[in-house]
Length: 276
Ligand code: 4HQ
Image (tube, rainbow, N blue to C red; front, side):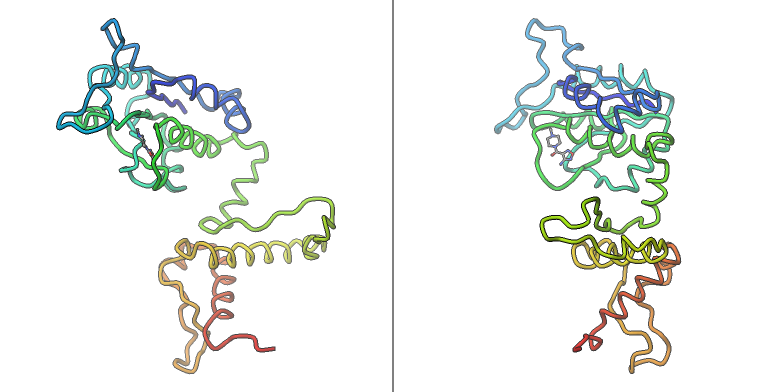
């Protein structure tokens, strides 16, 4: 996988990539990251990369000529068909699906803007796709570019030390993580959940999945399958067990996840409160 980053601050990219999983992916040659500085494509004595916005107002806009020249120079070093991606708050939200899609490509180009952003004609002429890392305002596209590189790098085959990590993650794909514990067994008066010490791997797997489902329900219900509702099985209103979420999305879940999610939702349904 080859990635190029067009940036006015190439040291920000190079300086952040030498650590952990990404650093090892670079060492192993699974990933190669290059940078291109638009300032290298200026010819005036001040090496000017920005200018005032037409129409007036505060802030500056990246000048089109050096930026498009940098995009073209970096794109020429990438495999044919590598998309040119602009990091912007107006872009498509980056999620795990987008990361997987990018990880399947031979390469791509990231454009990190500064100031108020790019001249829109550079977007028209030199950008294939826009991605946003979230609904907040940053001062530049370098951190978003690093976020994209990090999330893509760890999906490359051979990037994780323990290859099982990605397999384990796909087991709960689309759910929040379960809680983790390590030694000591008792820490500041807080015990590790006994099931994790039981040695019963089926019980542990079920408990973790139940924890992941409960946390997702509480904290990020938007991540659960469309149409997810807490509805009791065989409730008085209907004889047949009711669907607790769309049958179509049910099919996309691992059978174990589907079953435990149905159980969780049935237990959560109105009128099933434990008044013990
Ligand atoms: N930007 N996700 C770059 C962002 C942003 C985001 C603001 C993009 C500054 C120059 N990029 N401009 N959020 O906040 O990707």
